[in-house]
Image (tube, rainbow, N blue to C red; front, side, top):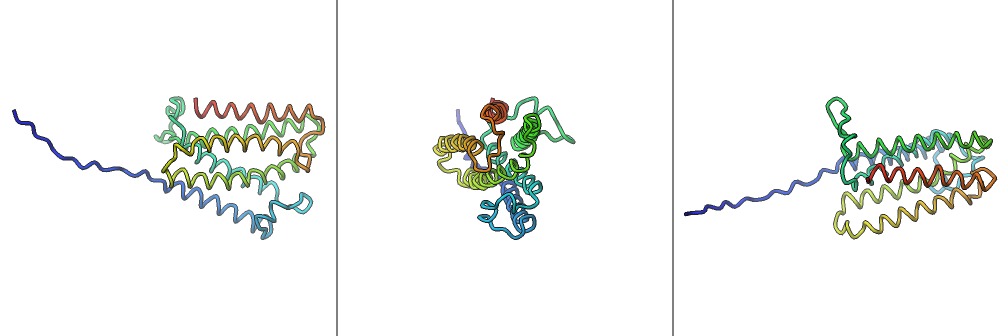
Length: 222
């Protein structure tokens, strides 16, 4: 009995990550527009050290920073999403179903919108609504810095995949430390952005920072 074998050349299909480049370029363009148009030709350092009394177009700047953060955060996290849940795959839009990025950006955007809406209601309910503009101005600087870091992480994750598994623990620890630093940033910032009483400060941190983070983690990875 003769056995014939045929040599097959296996072709490795490279993953196309052009969409990541488009997102990063778009986000950087938004930041350039924000700094030169909304912030009156401000530099990055000038924007970060700007005082509230000297600021302008705070709401538009906060909106742009929020959009950029959601995009780059979803881009980075979607790279590590194991699977898209069936309930999300069953939802189709003109015959297209959500991929990992579509699922992640939908969840992150909804999470971010609801959290900010509840934060606004929290400030209104505690009688400190006058601090809301100062709060948005202050936290936008934090998210601006985080989004820049996220852009760097996106480049590393998608275009330098070597030793990616070895980098995962560092990513996890770095994001965890970033989250912890965020709580101290909110609590002890010199602008005093949270309500005066410590009861309300810890109530905000627990209910509108820690709990939403755990919910987001649960939705994305379990």
